[in-house]
Length: 359
Length: 156
Image 1 (tube, one colour):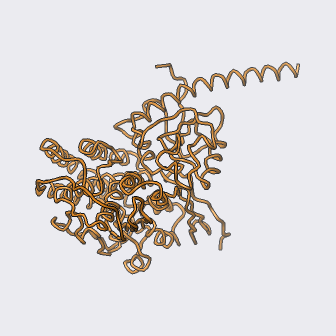
Image 2 (cartoon, helix red, strand yellow):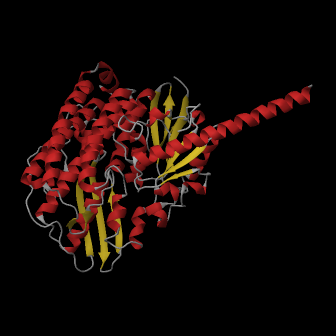
């Protein structure tokens, strides 16, 4: 029996772009327990509802996180629209879906790059981020922003796609699909990737369910759980099946997210083909009075938005439950019994978004 | 462009930003923008870093972390505040948990605006930081030389 010692992991660590602190109780090389400590990025964003009115709050909600910013803005708008009984025009619903899927692609590519970086595959990291720049180009071309788009508003969107832009997106999607096939070959054919990911951090279906895991992380363990199936925005009209894998290890997580990028490409194509004509937004009258809860599928999993208003310009309460917060208990479970050298890749494998979690 | 004699290494720390600027800092290191052609390299170790890129505002919990990272870096060092949150607190200025920009706890030399700061402006900040680092290390070298000579004089 070795001596037990506590190794601090983070808040500043090479594999982490964001600060999270884990106290790892280590015996020899094996992690016995992981105690998370969060709060390094807590800003108190939800409290800003007292100072910003419900229209301005869209821009604050988008800045919950720079990676899933579109989803946060959309979730917030949906919740306020639900309170105020606003019927969003069909074209706006499709546009939101298109941008949401493009955002999912850039988020997943970012994650794949960071994973490659976590196991030291530098060139694969660069390749993933090179492809991601094409997605960002599309987003910048259509919304004007690279990461924070600010195209949502309560009652719809305020940017449109013209014919040129639609053609541009379609051409670019073909290119990305081809590039992705090359990256996929490396991820699933390379022996060094397999060595670092196969059988590492296995989470069974039952554990994932009990610990409340969400998103691609849960789907990699075999839970068929995708909020897009509830058919919000235009998802009800699109044809897709959630991607699941049954192995539940790091390899399965890469597999699920890679396939989801291809799925997103298909979804954007479908949505562009079906894009109906019509208005972009409807004028909103009155003040929000009542409460609403909205669940949407962010790139990292299910996010819940709760909004409560009392007939004033300023909302009473705004609350976000983010997917990474739901995934932390499962991460701590996964770290028990893991090898110390695998901690970095295990933490990255849940796709942690700490600024969402702490807001 | 000035002649570069040193390759400063970069340490990036996320204060309490929304992630947007962090991702742009990483993106400016990757092939499309490739800040590494300027002779800089991203490192995870504060003890080997010369330039600190800090994103996001300062709150009660990360203030000691930022301070410690700054103190761990060897002199001479340059601090770049990336993004409007690191400059002033930005959109989150009115939040109850934000004390303000990075200059609340450490001296900041270069401010890069933007929400999120674009890779082009981050690279501009890095170039300015590199030149400042060059200047400071020359001053530092001159000081060290002077001190060495003084010590020699005392001995003899």
